[in-house]
Amino acid sequence: MTKRDRKRPARPIKTKRDYESASAVAKKMSGQKGRDATAELRLQSLLHELDKFDDSLEEEDTTEDATDDFGHPELRRRWSDDASSPE
Image 1: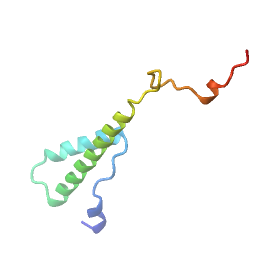
Image 2: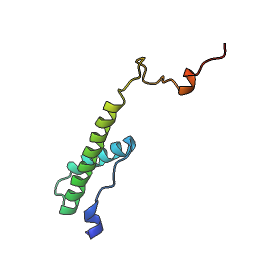
Image 3: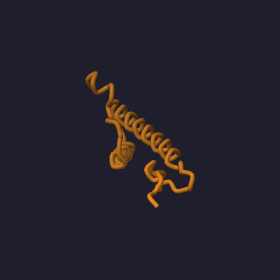
Image 4: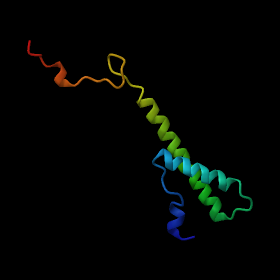
């Protein structure tokens, strides 16, 4: 294993698709018997990246619950809506 491989054996997980693929690989690797040291380090790194992605999802879930004054998270008024309308 080179120095470069020891720094980051698993790439960062950024999307849900990456997460699903990485969890499938982790499940497959964890079921294997007789892993060598390199495979064990890769599995540990992959599990670490999965945990980081889980934590980031939990943080996003709490910030998305914010609503405006009317209780609608999607319907927000623009500043131009407050301008006096020509009557």
